[in-house]
Image (cartoon, rainbow, N blue to C red; front, side):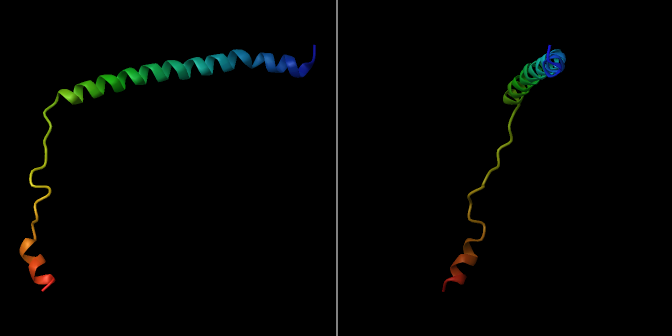
Amino acid sequence: MNPAITLGLCFIPLAIIVIGMKFILLLEESGREIKHVKEESLKDHVYLTGVYDDVDKEDDDDTYS
């Protein structure tokens, strides 16, 4: 058998293990993220009030006169 093929076949189990571990990590972290998003959606949210108020309204009139 060709040595290059034999050497390539030796790395197949290592590649399978690495790909498997990455897939398991993807599934585990996706589950954690879904859980985190659900928990955050149930919390009370603080919204800013007066975001679009014109705070310097009197200064605008003097600038363009």
